[in-house]
Image 1 (tube, rainbow, N blue to C red):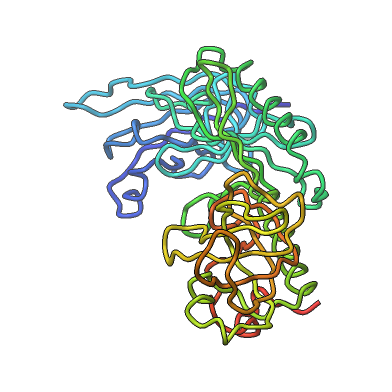
Image 2 (image 1 turned 180 degrees about the horizontal axis):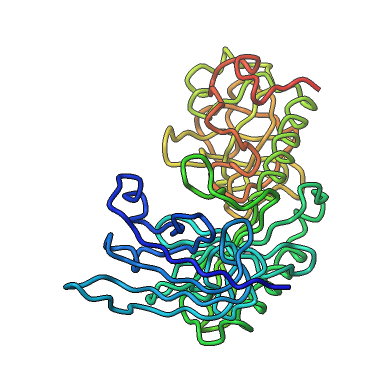
Length: 369
């Protein structure tokens, strides 16, 4: 049988109450019941709360009524009346809230259930009247089980579908909302960290209630997996050809005798074909410009103007067709077009490359098998 409790809570000016300036639980002196009060109702030590309803673990729970009053000029003036459902001491109005945790600065962590086996968690801001603002969302978060298979997390089709399901759930309860907000998928409990910040999501997007669209999708886990694949692909490329150094064409040109007969890695751009199987190549970037004669190139050698990652053996300086002076000569071993000028899609840890130094001096690219 439900027992209605009456909690009359009068605030005193004790130092302990100063922490309530950002909102907090108002407890009766006999500790029978407590209600969470947001900052808008907590500006004066003259606030009085009367509560009628049920309590659980010392906090308002279930159906209840809270009457907020304030002493002013010797009178007791009614400030607000909350009547409806309470949870964990917080007035929920009639929102379909299953769990709620109030935070400082009128923030709330709210769960309304599950969406496709993911716990749906709102990070919301209180409404102007001081009550919970379910639809005033800072972020909408999906909390997956910690043992969720990696393959599932890397599946962008599934993750985008999960975002759409969560967004549909939000719009069902907040059809008039128009303000954009962040969305995130997490594999651990969504809760404040020790410094008060919230954990970054493994996968994120941004929702636009006004248009009904979700954009800015980004899967950090998939990105990191691709980075790891690129690292191993690059290491395998080095191992396959026994690359002894990565160097710019300018470094090779300045002292070709140092590199003669050695296998090197270079990033270049095709200038023009000179014969059926040789071409003039140049530095891919504007810095340290130089050119060289690349021989023994295959028929499918990239010619779209993009940067090219090449493994080549340094030869003697020779004079190519159409030239009257000798050039640095490289014998082509293997090449791949790059998606970006620096070939960062191949050389993920580009900052670790020590150009023009023996390959063994930069283990990031020469990891053991």
